[in-house]
Length: 141
Image (cartoon, rainbow, N blue to C red; front, side, top):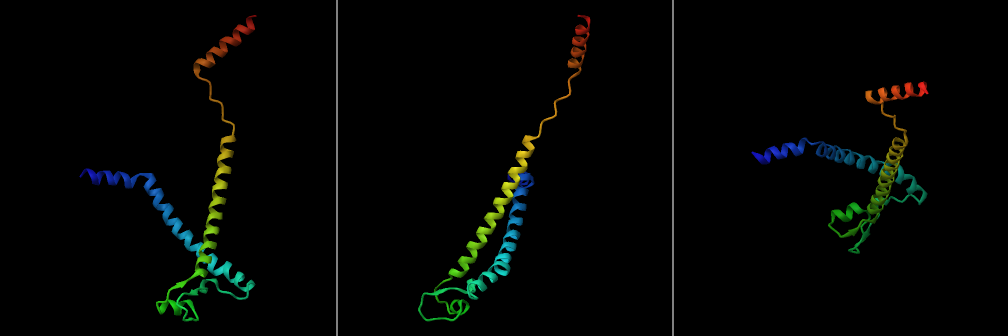
């Protein structure tokens, strides 16, 4: 019974829930970045480089000379799919850059928060009475 109770406490804590939400958002963000790279960024780069499709670039290690990566993989031939690696590197750079921008913005907001002048605390009743006494004594001089 004790281990189930401990697990419930762990699962309900904010940290575990925040982690789960972060993972879900991260997976969705990864899919968005993959689509941006494969569907938006790579086609213009491919045109600029002479209509080269990076995702289909490979090196046939068997030497049989397959026309496409799909054919080589279907035949079970060992290949170096360096085009897919290039796409993955581009995805990584984009994700790293976006995370950098998010962290930079968060740090900027944090600094602004720290720079705000703090509102002085309202004087206590005792301090108000002492101030009144001080003012009365100043007037008597």
